[in-house]
Length: 350
Image 1 (cartoon, helix red, strand yellow):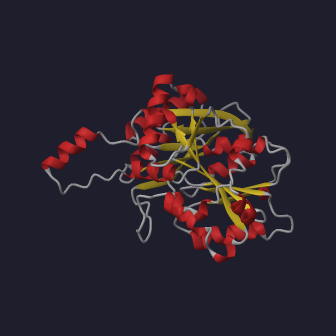
Image 2 (cartoon, one colour):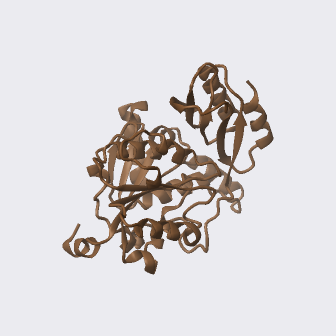
Image 3 (cartoon, one colour):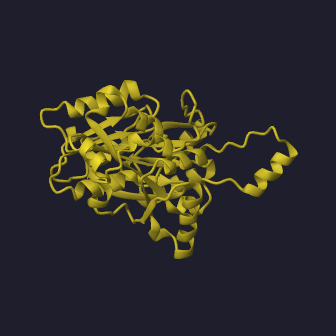
C-alpha cells in the first residue's frame, strides 16, 4: 500500500468483505479467522439469502473464547447488495458508534450477492470518512468450478445461437461467479483437498480467464489461512471501482429472480448417515444448489448441523439440543422454478 493511501486510511476502521458463491466455505473461513484472532476485536456481519440465519447461528455456537454474541450481526432475508440504505448503512453505523468499536469488521455476503454495489456504499458520506474496505476476499469452491457448474458449454451455446440468434443465453450462476472474482483483491481456492493437481491447475486457469487484472490466488482446505494474510491488505477498494468490472454495471438494480429459497421443518432422524444420504439424493433429484441447517437424531443429545453444496455434504454434532425440541430446519436454495412441494415432501420422508 502506498504512503498516501496509508495516511488517508490510518484513522478509518478497516472492513474486509468475504464473498463467494453458495457453499464456497465462507462461514468456515470465518470460524477459522475468529479462532486465531488473538484477542483482536473483530465484528462480523453475516448476510444470508433466505429467512433462516444458519451461518450466524453456526458462528455463535463456535465456542471461541472472546467471540461475543453481540459481535456477530445477522441480516437475513435481504441481500446487502440490494438493501444498502435500509440494512447496511444503519448496521455499520451502529457498530462504529459503539463506546468500544471493533478494530476490524468482516462482512460475509450472501452467496448470491454482487460485491460491487456493496463497495459503492463505502462512498456514502456517513461511512466514507470512518471506514475503508481493507480488501475483498473471494472464496472459490474448487470442485464446483472443476465440475463446470459456473460455465456454459461454448460449443452448445454457439450452435444454439446459429439456429436462433434471438435466444437469451445468460447464465445467472456464471454472472455471479464472474462478478465476485472481478471484485476481488485476493482469491482463495477452497476445498483443494478434493481435487488433484491437474484439476486445480485447470481451475486456476479458469479464474485467470475470467479476471482481466492480475490477482493473488491462494489454495486452502477448510478455509485455514493465517489471519495476517486475510486482514491488513490495505486495498482501499472503494477508491478503485473502475478496476472491478461487473456484469451489472449501468443497471438500475440487481434482482435475485433467478433464485429462490425456502425452509423445511424436518422430523427427528433415526440415523445421521441415512439422513445425509437422503439429503444428497434429494439434491440430485431436483438439482438443488445448496442445503444447510440442523436436525435432531434419535439417541443424540447434540444437534446435527449439515452443510451441502449440490450432492456434497458435510456434518458435525455442534451444540446440545435444548429442551424437548426435536424438529430440525433445512434451508433449500435453488434456481427459480424448482418444485417446492415435491422437495418438501421428499425431505419430510424418513
